Image 1 (cartoon, one colour):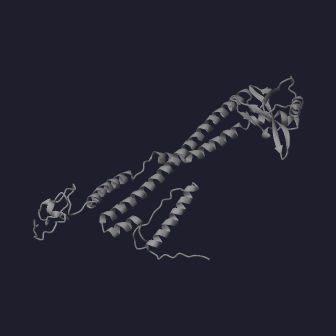
Image 2: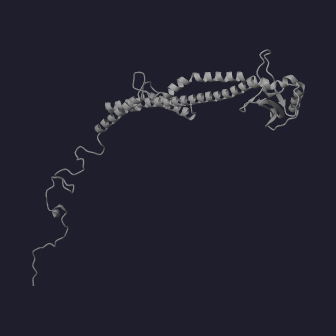
Length: 340
């Protein structure tokens, strides 16, 4: 059986139900770490809604100072919530600024290293002005010939037999650039296969690959693999510069957010001062508990009252007269005399 609970609009019951619902939503958001900038607002007295508990107490007490205090407390709570949200957003902006700045610095470092390798390649193997081709000064260890077929067959043999166990093995040079091969394990479902990848190492240790490091079966294409890898340097520089341009777009806005200060600190200070003044005023109007109108502040007795607690209308009789007389029995005398 369904049980329904009813509440009249703009009543205290309606206010309490809505308040409990809002608090439950707040608790759920807190547990799920999805609080964002949500705040608990108990409402305010207006024609469309009820009032919060403090405002009800203030109205029922008939003290306008209490009502003003409730309003000030609510304003301060709203401002404190806004300040927390502001500083939270400021912290997020600072984190994003540091992340973007670090990304730009990292890209600039790579751009410098790429540029050094590219300038050195143009120095030792410049492009021929007539043919537009770049010479290929490839040298393989253990091979004295410059013949393309011999070099290509040597690369094919290395690709088939080399096993480096995830380490890099030097197999030749291209001017001062080292030619390396590395054996990697490739998982395909339940099976594992070994695959050799070829690369050319730059002056600062950056490794450039062409065709994902896989060597071509054709000898001519295999020999050109390393020159083609170095020819990709300008595109890599351009890519890093584009990333820097994208990262730099938001930096001025983030810097402005981080450098700014919250504009309502003075208002919070002013409201706190008003609240402190109002609290002192309320304390002076409230009668301390435990004091009576007929008594004195220090608890002394009223003038003319006896220390024994007796009233003033008691006659000042001797202490003996105030007690019940003794119940001694006297022997009656019948006036007879003894006859001798």
